[in-house]
Length: 588
Image: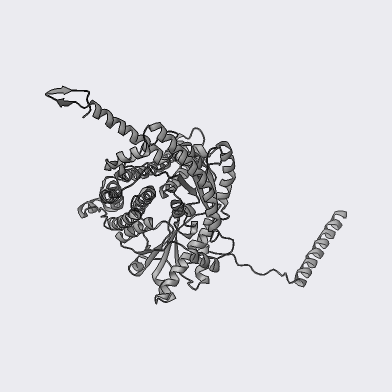
């Protein structure tokens, strides 16, 4: 009886509490309302029948990469345009129409799209025509970085600027482009990916070659002129690439396997075709016309940092590459290929780490265990094959340009170097690469200074900066400078770079003086020798790198001095005929 009374009392208390809570909520206007959960807005698909009248917009890389991608896409039958390099006006538009608190690559890239659409409107197109006849193609991701919010930012800014309904096609790094149930207007097939990868590789090589030659050119502006002509020529090479097809009689025999056989044929063609090689041979002849002077002392500055900030060539990183070259530095830029290999490397790492996740089978079930092991090795070998093929194709193109451009970095060595300071399994941004590349370039004597360009408030790069404090404490001689970029603050950034560059310039000058002292010849003697040997003034003259010597000028005078001694020795030992007798030891 007592137990029943207690239960009734508890029920009465709970009822009174509930009634009092309802009274207070009503009094304060906090009555619960029906909530509607967010759902990603449905978007009109870009279908195959729209391809003829729809223009695909893209951007975000250097103009060299984008012009070559444009040629490749045109060769596949797409109408396409690439956006101009983002500027401060684009940054302001991104801030005006987007959310607060985004990183500046978001503002620059989102605002750049809005700016392009507004330019189209000024040329006479209506908003509806733009929405119907243009789509934007970009990359996306999901992870501990605001890069995963780009898609939402594009859609918000487009709606706020009056272009609601404009289509944004997002290619996920971890997936792909999916438009289920329709024939996609942008077909992500083997032709598409091979065309893009070839354009990126060739763009990387030309971009790096321009930076390697420009600081040493004798005739100012010649490198830029040759580079412009070469990129436009290679645009047509990319566009004219023929894609192999299975003959009709073989297609009938293969039936449903035609697609697999065609892809295999295209893959073999990629490995064996000299189409791009021939184009680069023509380009090499144009660059060989440039005369260089490698006795100029230039501090070497290697660029690292957040992907977009270290890649763009405009206001997004304060035009930093041109500024460094005007200050007398040689700039070494990071290729897009490094990022592609990094993603493949991370996929390999994830495959290994998750091998036995969600798998359990009794020891006696050898059939299940064998099937699991075979599936694991298949996935791993496919990723390893992709790594090998990508590096093989890059090196094949690189050899055509005399191996002047450095090879792609070994991701496994970078992981080994960076992991003690920054866990290589931590995702987001460049991951462990910023730390690893700083150690790599300094330890390998490949740079006098490492400059890390990153957006203001970028979380992954901020984490890297924290780790860099330990790195610089362990490697006392390295010159490392992180610069945060935004839509303003260029003067402050230039001032900081100039101070660090002064130290790098001093290191390069001292190194050059030591090299001249060691070689046994004066600078005038070296220059006089090179004047008599045109091959030494070619941008494709391969300068041998010596351990402990960073600068190109220092390595150059040491190598030329060896050639001078060899020539002098051969001249002294050359036999001459005097009065009918052979004098083996006289000088000719």
